[in-house]
Image (cartoon, rainbow, N blue to C red; front, top):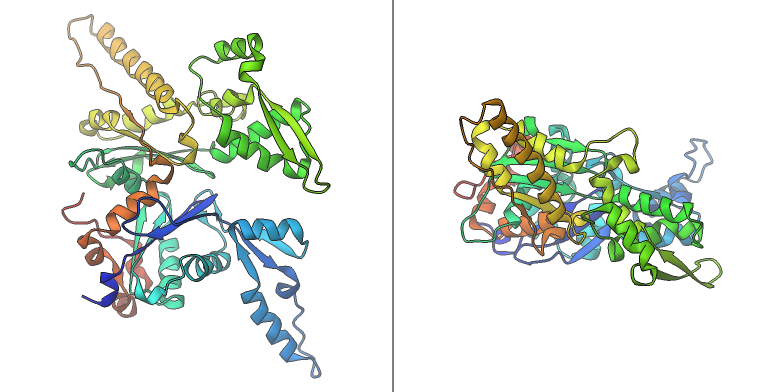
Length: 429
């Protein structure tokens, strides 16, 4: 066993909106940063001239500076606001890496500037979306083994890790449905005995970012006094601090109208350009924001299927012998599932759909046969915001992890194609 096997593995969960990173064995990630890169355009756009008298040294130095002069996360956002020479790049869109150059720079900063570790001394666990093509795994393997020279790499599917994070007893329950609501995408993924049922995965075009945009739209339409350049960030903070899930939307409207002083909150901010303070009201958007998951037509007229119906379709398309177990273990993952009472509303709405189907089948059979009731259970736990990262931390802490990793020696012998498949941990799933 090499020396890196005695050091904790590096666990990096790259999401569309945020990246969580840290070391195996920890309960929470060490750093959570926005998945964005700011690059200095003045170096990147340096003209390449081939004239005899051109200053090649200047161009060479510009290339070196372009490799050094970039920022990630909150620093990148701050630079892009304060200087027009920096442009923002979001390397991941809807769970898929679209800019590999920016992604490589992002990982470079994560490893050296945040985690401050030598990648040659640690095994790495990275995460991927359930719909990631095999070619993306090859690119990831190339960057990790060629650029960072890591001794071992394991690329895990996010929903499987989220399920592993939901361990509530000593028994490892690796059959369930993971409802992963991230910043850039929502996936409903059925997992049976640790294996993703790929044909039953459902993906919907409503995510955490859409809730933020809807809150921003509601506040703008009401004419709230929020600076335009700050409106998205204010909407995001309002979503995270004040939004909740209502059981009955009409009752919530009536509550706000009857007792506005009790339910309407005040937001206080400072205008970034002038430094002047401002205030605005936070009203109906407190419960209308999360409502886009249950009544998506209020936000998007092109997509009208509620999340509970999507989860039910997902389970119904899975093999019949797994369905009861899947209904019994619906696990939430991602920051946008953290709204107050979100799991209760989801469980209630799914239970209504299931009970209606059972009743319809009994009526169709003339009441001759009584069906066994179907147990619906939506699992909510304190760690669900970092569920994927925590699941990775748990699995990377096991002795089996090091045996399951692809090694540098295997990569050199067989090439990047080894990363197309990841062995399942024997005895774990």
